Length: 388
Image 1 (cartoon, helix red, strand yellow):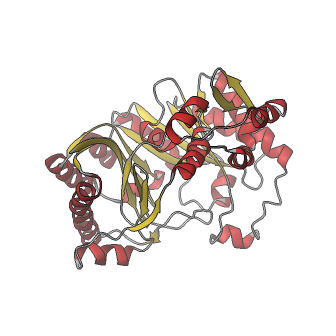
Image 2: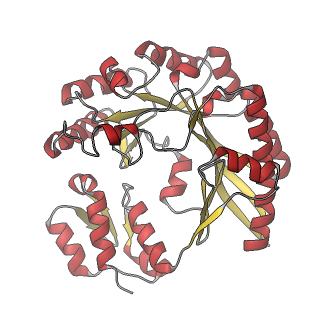
């Protein structure tokens, strides 16, 4: 029987208000004690059933969780008691001693007492959804919090003992220029965050923003977007941050360990509606439906998962290229051949080098600044050139 180290992700599908740009699964609701307890009971049942599923399918006898990440939705809407109960269950039934336990939080959901309780029960990293340090930006993005809420929340985080926290931003919103963005970054740096995330505003199908703007960000041209990326990278690098992944910056040793598992194609389990899991070449997803999820586990006592893919070596090679090129370290050409039995021809790589989209050092390739702007196009080009 095998032992496996893996990350554990919990998707919390509750929000006070659905943001107009968000395509993650969530529902607007007040989280009552009854709903919290019902969700907790379903999660425990899911974990029990997953344990049996993994033993039967992969002969995995022992699961060791090395990271934990609660995302959403708004995970900080749930009480510290909810997480304490879940952690106790995990400790009792699995090898649960993760080095990194991350909680995504929204500023308006925190109090000092609540933040201290999150720290005391075991969370050691917070990902704070700042989104913008501009009142105009917060209004455009439809956020409930104000700048004052953000300042208070960061104060709570620091007073509660958290040394590791991330400030997460969305950039490229209507009305944001380079000067506004730089002001926001400098404001954030005053708090000495070990980690910062900057996600470009994208118009996802099915969101209110997609319908309002008809899928097109008419207010921002490619050149302006490039300048915004430059502003982020140059400002942060001057202040000691490394762009270790396309959207993520950290001072040394503060990279998000859990997210690195995804980018490096390591195994992970996802709990909750819409969460995905990946073990070896099997990847599956829970349906984006809370009622179905709860009913499957609490009434029918069965996993709500739907098998997405049993990935073959070609699909795995493509995923390795897609995920690996998001990272500063890029991908190993020998590793591509050894693990997946595919290679990239020299002429294809030379073309990208000439276009200043990739660099090659020994047997590794990684994206240049220009290549990061065109990540998807570079990836699709390499997929077409894959040889076995």
